Image (tube, rainbow, N blue to C red; front, side):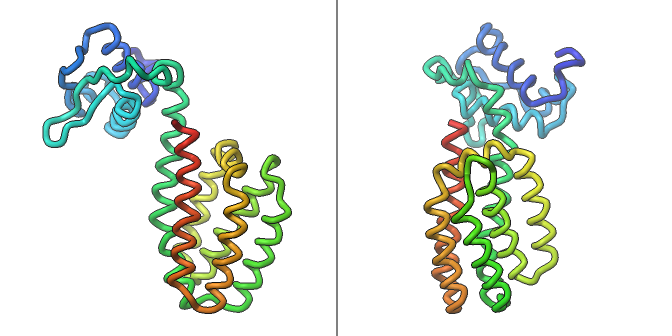
Length: 229
C-alpha cells in the first residue's frame, strides 16, 4: 500500500478485497495474521480489525474459531459488498458507539430508581412534552430524545455517568444524520416507552422501568443496524 492509502480501515479493506477479487488470495485460503498485516501494510491493529470485521460482514472473509480468518466466496452473491464498502466502514464507529451506549444506559435505571427526585421526574416530563412536539425531520426529535437520556443519566446523581454520557452524546452529534434518520421509525415507540418509564420511576418500580428502557435502547440499535445492512 502507498503512503496515501495506508492509514484508514477503508483503504485496508479495499486492499484485501482487491487481493481476493484478483485471485491473489484464493477462496478457502487463510488470511495473513493480524500481526503480518500490520507489519506489511504499516497500519494499526485497530484499523486491521475494523477492516476485517466489515469484510467478514460482507462475505469476503469468514472467521473460524481457534483457526483464524479465511477467504470466503459469499461476497459473489452480495451485490452490496461490491457497491457500498465505504458506507459499511463509515457505519462502524456508529455501531461501536451503540455498543457502549447499551452497556452504560442499561444500568441507569437500577441506580436512578434509588436516587431520583421529584424535580428529576418533573424535568423528564417536560422533556417528554418536547419529544411529542418535535419534528423528527429537522433534528428536533433527536435533540429532545438525547436530552431525555441525559436527564435520566443526571437522575442517577453520579457525576462520572453524566460525564461519560456527555461524551456519548457528543459522538452521536458527530453522526447526526444517521441518528436523525432512525427517528422516523422510533418516535412513536419512544414516546410510549418514555411515558411508561416515567410512571414506573415515579412509583419506584425499577424492574418494569428497566425492562422498558432495555427495549428502547435495543430498538434504536436495531433500526441503526437495518440502515447498515
